[in-house]
Image (cartoon, rainbow, N blue to C red):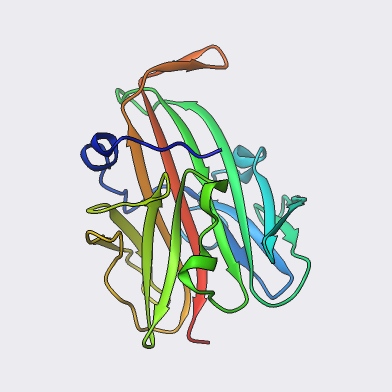
Length: 228
């Protein structure tokens, strides 16, 4: 499933992550329930953007190395989708949202894809926290020494000098932080539920569903609870 991008694409075409905008987040509600939102926060959008725009999202849970498909239920009143997560302990839910070809104003037409991810239960080791080639780009939580960092990975390789937008618990303003040569962000200490997103842009023209595009944009998001 994943695509290994050339180094020139990864390092020259990693665009600045947007500090605002709508992204697909998978948000744990408890150990067995979650919700999918299309928002600029971890809460369902309240600005009139309907969650039906991500109706084609496909979800699965990875538990003990086995992937199982999950069903989404539309909660129109709450402007979100809900889902049930079987099992117990640490599980990782991943999704794929193909938004199709999109253009805003005079910007280039783009093929837009989201790869949301959430950790249910305790944060696993970085090796077990990665879903590997199941998605082309992802964020991996790295908890060590009472601190949390995010590792950006694309095509199985760390994304150096990428910008990760972090929704820090209890803070209204998002924080945009760069990754180092190992793809890691700075460390965070505040306990709570974090959201994060990173963007990879590939300058590639093509056509999808009868619409032409000039670049491919892929967003990885992650929701994880730390220190609770």
